[in-house]
Length: 561
Image (tube, rainbow, N blue to C red; front, side, top):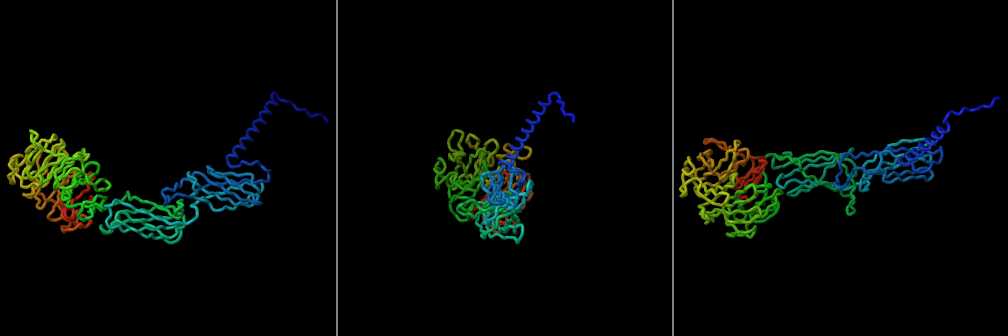
C-alpha cells in the first residue's frame, strides 16, 4: 500500500496555531459570559443541567406608603435541588439569570425583589422545575407583593376653608371578593379614612369621593386609582401603612365659605377657624396673597397669610403710639389701603389720623401740611392708592389727597366740608359722608377714582384731573371694591348681601345681587343661598375670589367664583 503523505500548504502551521488560539479565546469568553449569568462554578460533566430564569415584577400600582420605594433594584434568588443541592444569589441586577451546572432532578426556585434600600417589596411563588441531564430549562419568576397583612390608614386633607360639611365615601376593591368600605374620622380641617381590620397585602382599587353638604352634596373631589398594600417597615407598628392625600385637584363649587375667625369675639391668633376677631370692619388684599384686616375693637391691624394664619401686624392696646409692630398703638382703625410694596395705610376715624405702616411693621404718622405740621383731617373713613403712590382719603364730606412725600391737600368736594350732592369739576362737586374709596385703571389705561357717597346713596366716579359723575344708585351700601377686569362688588350692609355691577356703569344702571339671600346669619352655601351677618367690607384677590369682613359675625368669609 502506498504511504499516504500530506502536502503542507505554505503557512499551514501558522494558520493552525491561530485557529487554536482563537478557539481558546472563545472558550474563555464563554466562561466569562457564564460567570456574568451566574455560572461561576466549574463544570461537572455533560450530565449536568442548566436553568434560565426570566425575572419579572408586577408592581404597576403605587403603594399606600409614601416612604416605600417600589422600584426594583435587585433580586435575591434561592434554589433547592436533589440530594441537598442548593444555590443562593443575592443582589442580582439583571432581568435574566442562568445557572449551571445543576444536578439533574427536581428543583424549587424562589425570587425576591428588593428596592435600592435593600427592602424586599415583592416575591415570587416557589416554582417547581424538573431538570434533565444535559438539559436547559427556562422558567419565569413573577414577583408580586410579598404576602402578609396590615392596617391601612388614608388621610385626606384640604384647605381649612374649602369644605364646610364634608361627606366622604371611600372603599378598597380587591382583585377578587367584595368591596371593603373604610370607616371615617373627621375634624374641622381634614378627614381621615381608615380600616381597622387586618388587610391582606396586594393590589386594590381605591375609590374616594368628597362631597360638601353645604352645597347640596356637590362633588368636591374624587379619585380612583390602583394601589398596593404593603406591610410596614416600622418596627413599632409592624402592620401599619399610611397615605396622605392633599386634594390638589379639589373642585370648589362657587359660593360662600368661612375663611377665618371662629365667630366668637376675641383676639386670638391662629389658623382659620382657630383665630378670633372683635368687629373687623375693613379688609384689603395685598402682595404675597396677604389679607390685611382692621380689627377695629381690638385696636389692631391683623394679617392673614396664604396658609390662613392670622397674626398681629401692628398694634396692641388702644392709644396713639408710633413704633415697631406690637409696640405701636391705634384707636379704632376703620380704613385701610395696601401698596404693592407691602406698605399699609390706616385711617383712624375717631382720632382723625392717618398712619403709615412699613412692610416690616414700623408705624408712623402720615399727612402733613406743606410746612411739615400735622394735617387736620376732618373724618377719615377710607383710603385708596393710585399708581403714582398718591393716597386719596374719604375725609368727612370731601376727598383729601396725600402725595408720595406725605404732604396732604384738598382734592375734591367742598374744602370747608359742606355737604351736598353735585357733580362737575372736582372742587365744585359736593358729597355727603363718603364711606369708601377705590382707584381703578380701565382697559385703555385711564385711571379713575370711585367714591361711595353714602349720604346720597350713590357711587361716583372721577379722574384725577376731571369732573365728578354719578354711576350707580345704591342705598345701604358700606363698602365696594373693583376687580382687575372692572367688575365692581358692593357691600349692601342693610340687606346682608353682596351686589355686583360694572365700573363702566352709567347712572340709571342697577347693581344685581351676587351673594346672600338677605337674611342675617353666617351660613355657607351657593351664592344666593348663603347668609351674612353684618357685612362691612369686601376685598378681591388676583384670582378674582372675594373676601368679606362680617362685623357682628366676627369672621372673614370667602366667596369663590
